[in-house]
Length: 68
Image 1 (cartoon, helix red, strand yellow):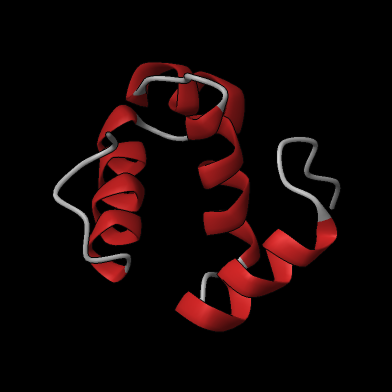
Image 2 (tube, one colour; image 1 turned 90 degrees about the vertical axis):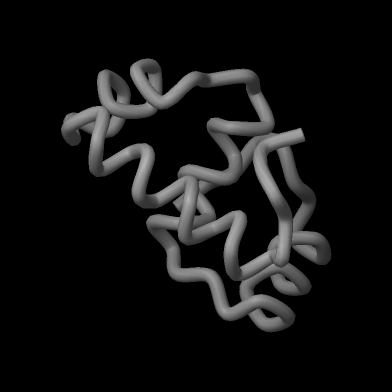
């Protein structure tokens, strides 16, 4: 799976350091490109609620309050 926003070293750090799955890495990449939950759901063919859950879980794992 190709990620255009991060280089390989950054991807390894995120996956190993925080334990993100491939799907979560895909979502992180799209978030960094500015996609909203609705945009994520359209691109990934999931419901907006599922996208919101993924984002919440990613933020929780990173100990962040939100996207910013």
